[in-house]
Length: 423
Image 1 (tube, rainbow, N blue to C red):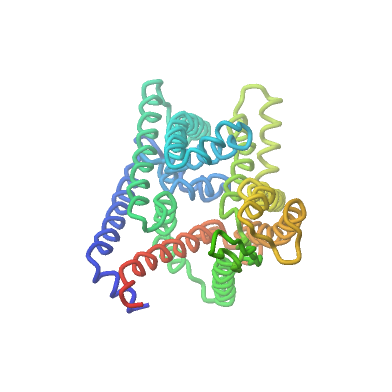
Image 2: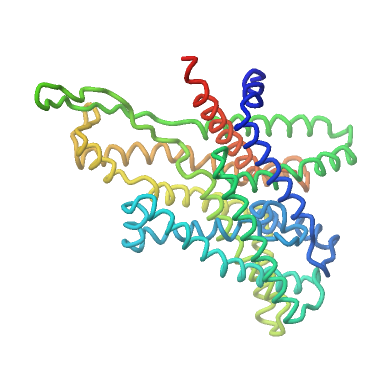
């Protein structure tokens, strides 16, 4: 590892790329500390620490939401727009044709539409968040002009982070959006560690040891599930063209255990977020019936057991759903058949598609249960240790480890490109 680190800083181009990315992330963290005026920071801190919905939403904003900074939404609207556009490709055939059949030009057009969709989503999310904070007395009276100014600043902040993320992605060392979220998660670690050290209780030493063991086991599990894959053997028939013979080789089709990544958790979070958000907003309604129903719904979603169970089920369901979106056994079967490939012992065509469907269902089951477990890990830890605040939850841990693995792979790829003379 030390040798690779030394190699990284020996190569000027690679060193400059890494220093550029670090500089961008520092700029992001500096921007995230500039708050919107008129916010009671103490009440805001208590609100996010006691509310699981917005604590998770703050995670995907890169930590900017907890201080209502000028980048309060982070890259959340861009992620939401990307998910919506991906779902639309399933519903609108012309979109799928543009994305898959028009090559690089089609993907650039698709990405441009995603950027445009980010703007209204950012405006809606900012308006909803400010309205909610006003109802919770965290934010004072806001005039129409002030509301317009806050929404404009929040949209500009999201677009700025989206641009910074694309600058990082262009360096081909990690995904820019993922690295911004990663920086927001990691930035909260020093404060959390200092809080734990300040409130350290020697009588709970055994609890801290168990917590450390669970975190290590979770990291180990994330690495295994992120890297784990099922290799399906594929053989290609021999073909004769003129006096030459082609094909006859054997390879494999890799099926990842976790095809969906962290996307199902984002889907589930979005579904679980809105009922609680609307209930909190309507709890102060003038109509007593509406206010009573809203408070009852809010209390249900604040129940740890109900929230954890529903969250787990939704994550598992969305894992299967998103895997079905990104992995189509029928198209893979047709592609193999056109290229003269086949799975040994399996007839090409429909039988191959059925076989792949059966395999992907089995591998997705373990990935879905793992994602669900990671998502509800903070609730389990809080239930057994009575710790009310955990610096990085299961979702944050999954993002951090996944981003580190992907970034390290891309850095190693850059090193291999510059070391080809040594082979």
